[in-house]
Image (tube, rainbow, N blue to C red; front, side):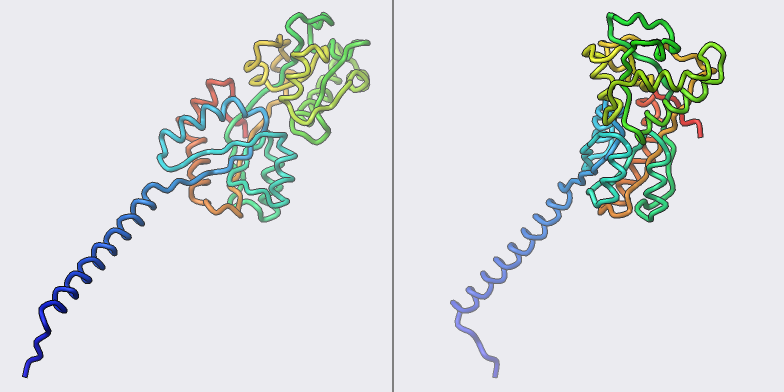
Length: 275
């Protein structure tokens, strides 16, 4: 004999099932919507000399890659490498040299070998009024000239030291150029941006910076270093192995070294990497 349930019970069961289905569908829809609207925030640790260009890179990359945002932190490459070693939450490291990112890779802290993404050259900057009358790079070793430099170990300091050693072999500079140059250094700053700031404020007579830093400031005057005396700088980047967004970090590096990234770097005066 078939059991027949009273009508009120049947209606109640049907309504409950309908509500349950609607609730489940709504929850699934909300979950899908949340996933679709989710965004990935990439933490980019970058050399101070990249600050201006990365502002434009951020705008272009976020427009081209919906769901990705870039948070950019700049300082000297050496300081940033140390922070990453100590566990700072970086996803990508962009350095003004190749040694600092290579150090991360060698220690197992980068997910792939160093990617070379830009090149740069050195130039001398002086305050707009040039009160010390600097006319050529050799004048940086002239008695009484106040030179603003960078802390030892920072990439711009290493490149400057290479330049000083290179020109010291030239008769126009003299073998004692390095000694006289070092004697004129009145302060050593944390990064190249600080050199530009101090020279612009007339707190020093001159400094050696990247061509791109000089180009970005309208408060300093440039004294060019001849091509045959210059020292090329190569910028390298890595995706940090501890990143929770490894694929997104690798994709950003690929974009930066592609046509769109290269075009933005070139517009700020960066050259293709030399190595």
